[in-house]
Image (tube, rainbow, N blue to C red):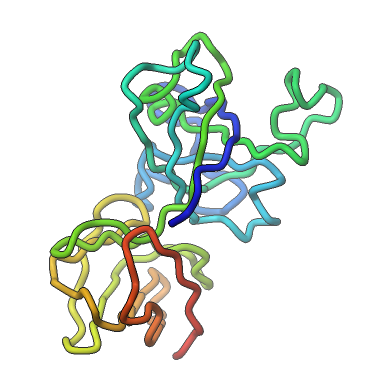
Length: 220
């Protein structure tokens, strides 16, 4: 299982997240693209020159430093849609929050408000990548780093003992299936809004587990 990694978080974009539209990942209107208001900009250390656009992260307060965090230990899941640029005119610990090598999230305000006290401005958090979660009859799959337009309009899943099954969008780039697929090799088919269909065979081995991350080979 992925480990929780310490980082810090600020917020931007206003209470309706209207100020988060567009961004360095080129997703345009995040409302119509399906990303919604639970998004984040990544610091240089996380952004990887755009390679992490579309990646999903679970973020929660650092339980050892709770003064400016909301109680309850809630976890948010956000999609990377933007870049938080460094500000070398300010120190990394005093305003230059996104300066390398800091791992920092500039979160859309509606998501921030779940875990952070608004007047805090910046809070300590821990995070991990979010890819496959659910239970034996509910798979929730996050798909990131898709080429072409990058906007996914349909996803199918196939177990080694099943036919292709259409998944439904849970939110953002998270897609769900209610099939029982434990113990089966998983394949995926993705259609983007420019009409291209990509098929990823045997992405996850039969011993896949919830919380795991897999990088497929591309097959057309």
